[in-house]
Length: 140
Image (cartoon, rainbow, N blue to C red; front, side, top):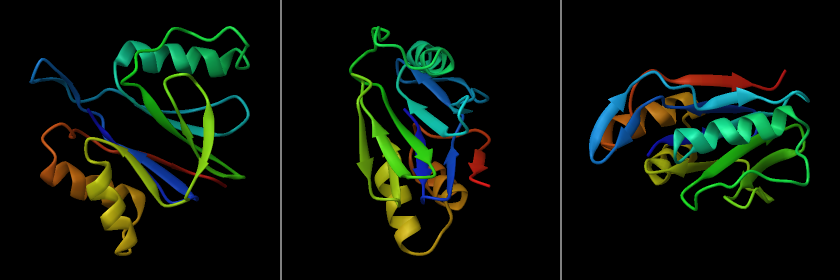
């Protein structure tokens, strides 16, 4: 699946793609910036991540793309960290939050003082469904 970690100031994501129990690609970008300067880190099927990115790029119209139930995302904004469900509904979360198969590991690492990119690296070391290079972004 993946690991996305956020501390309210920065967000980080792994880049591994898995499917059918196999590693498929290690350089898929799961983190993107929206036109209004927010950062979004996505989990789930890559097609759903692309559809959500396009939805943000077109101003989040009322007509939402059909997204699989395994999709979830974290959205880092100046107003805090938000969880984006597969129904594309945003809910404010704790600033220190992580999602995906390595999410619990990453939360523990951040609560122990690690930055999001360090937390994702720790999760990659233990979670077989997270890996590849880490991408990260911070609010300016």
